[in-house]
Image 1 (cartoon, rainbow, N blue to C red):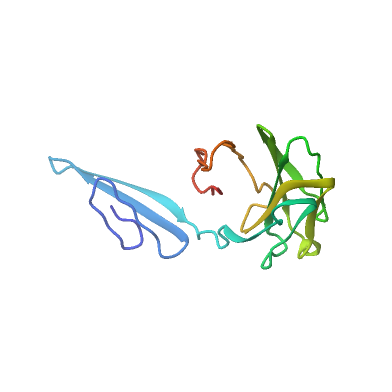
Image 2: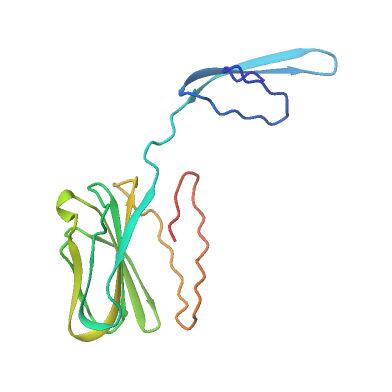
Length: 189
């Protein structure tokens, strides 16, 4: 097999990694036991890998304990165009009001496990969101947990394609649910 870049192979299964993007002619030559030969060629296009792979930028969390508000600030290092994922966990009967400050957060999903509820939002950060504080309010002291996670290199038109959750509130350990994703997708746990 001739891969068009001076790499050759004779194994039943062969692959190559091209040094540069471009068009190449791949030629397969097959010879049978009677020395008869067949040749087929095809054009292939090698592309440059993505220049902006997904990276975890940072996270921020609200304070522990009971309070009348929970807040977290977009982590340092966040930039316009990054994706922010926000998770807020509360007692399902509390009724916290929020999120505030970062406008345009889209609710992705919510999960209730026994007495606890977690709600998830997403947004692509703008310049005015940098350093902003997300806040939830409640007229009485209660426990809640707010987490902001920021990622770069995310498809801003669809930061979250599939969302899976598993609850184990009566345990001190957590098992991440099994997720099947297509090639080139990223899984965040």
